[in-house]
Length: 162
Image: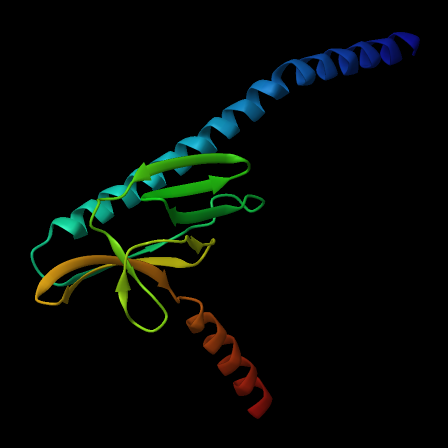
């Protein structure tokens, strides 16, 4: 009986030692995958902006900021001529084409002076529009959550009618 208890005790010690040894490598691997995913998203957004900026006709593209992990926060910021992705204290950036502008609240096209902030599950619209006889690339925050709100309102109304 004593041998059984001692073997289980030493097996538990060995398992804990193995866990303590391997856990940092596993967590580091997950962190690296998260950074790779953010880098991939940023390069995808950069290629999307570059593509829209080079078209010679009117076009609109929408980039929805995804939720990578349930506990992570991902934010997209457009400022100082760059697109920044911020997540868990890390920052990555790519430069915008020099002629990209934004649309203010009153509909005027202007240079980006402040910052545009887009959170998870929100969208960034990249659009090629005509202004003063020239094609201009503009970026702005796009509303996308109204559908979910409408769906939940319709569902609650339908269930109350039944």
